[in-house]
Length: 131
Image (cartoon, rainbow, N blue to C red; front, side):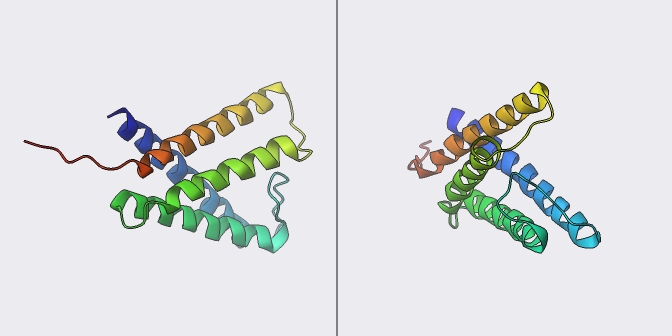
């Protein structure tokens, strides 16, 4: 039961993240201004493309995991998100506005790490319920 709660948390965390990524990409594509997210390794039109297709890939991985069609893709997606967050916010020279924004990012990374650990419950064998 606890593993199921963690898994639902992981699905919801990444569902919201994917919608956010696709929303930012849609706004950036429809806007003439240049999108700049210093925490990500891409820039310009490549950034818009990666945000859009990355968000779509994340949604597909969630759907495949929930339906059980290809559930092993979702942990790879969650690991990729954690790696990009740690690299972009902590390893690269990212400048935070203040201490509060730094702690918010740490909470966001902790949430992504927990979602990754929760996604690993997909590797557990399923138990059959007996009546």
